Length: 146
Image (cartoon, rainbow, N blue to C red):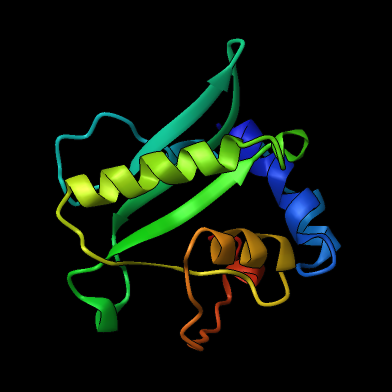
């Protein structure tokens, strides 16, 4: 999964995030972020798309981290290998993510998209997500804690 995550970032964020940050990404730095099978209902849950024994993408959901969206779910991330883009993998993962959120009792959910990242903006709009105009600043790129 860390490999998918890190292969997708340069393809998705080049030109939006400093090249030096993207070029320094390493799978071992991401490994601790992934946990599976937690019985804690508030822990993030990840659905993985596998084709021919190869992880092609994943979607992670959980309770919203935003104070103003209490009671909402959140799509924390949807990442695919770039050669899986446009192949229906993202759509299938979104169906699973929605099902997981619904199964946890969430009737609405939020997600964040990096400003200027047009491909996912289009994908989410087609899927029925609507921008609410909210913006937030993060220093995760400079701190390396994304």
